[in-house]
Length: 303
Image (cartoon, rainbow, N blue to C red; front, side, top):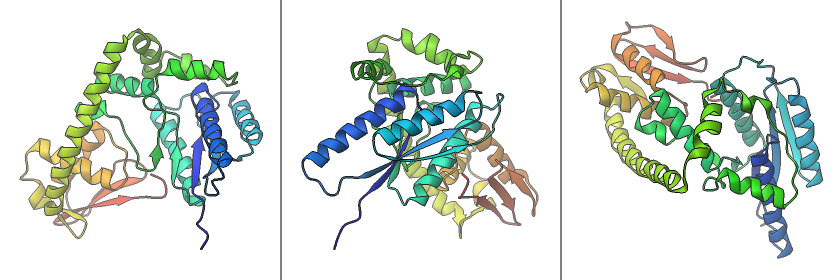
């Protein structure tokens, strides 16, 4: 029986990071083909246009030409989010599109160009926002592959120059009103190699610690749930910090991207809302109270 080829969605914005990612993928794919590997994966290039910049349509055209030059399929989507769109809303819209493309093509995963500097930026931004130890890890989706995660930005830039690659520059990356841009340009470049390594070690340690906490919290969550609903009488007697951990695990298990404020609001709602009330955590995620339980409703198609 002929085995189906695996399909992967490659997220390409047109910036140097994703251009390098795509070049490396194509080079690796050609190498596999040269050794007569009939099961080499199929790659589909996906581009999301937020409609935030006036010239963003040119990015889509650039990525489409790039995909065609490599002989790869190309899919894109444009939405009009406007100049004032937040970083979070832009990111959520982009992932919603990428996941929808992945599902449509029955792909294994989405491949993104996140690199080491992105990890450091996320750590620092989350520390400034006060997200706690888990913020040092950053949010990771099980359907994402990030093969460049251990590569510093400078290495990607050098690769692009060595291979004479062309890319698009996003002018919003220079807007210092975004906290991430400030961290990207004013903090991360000033870190020494030893400081970078120390931060990565801290993150790796937190990954292990949070995994252990999640494992224990999942076991306790099972005891607190009944038919998928949170039993209020079992929940309210727990310490506040443990309540937050259980809510966080519950939301993550249901594919919800969360932050500290969402967790705190969910905990407060679970403890204080009267029966037959509904509270929106996001436009896609709600909590509904019954006499004895809390029901979590998630629009899986749009989370």
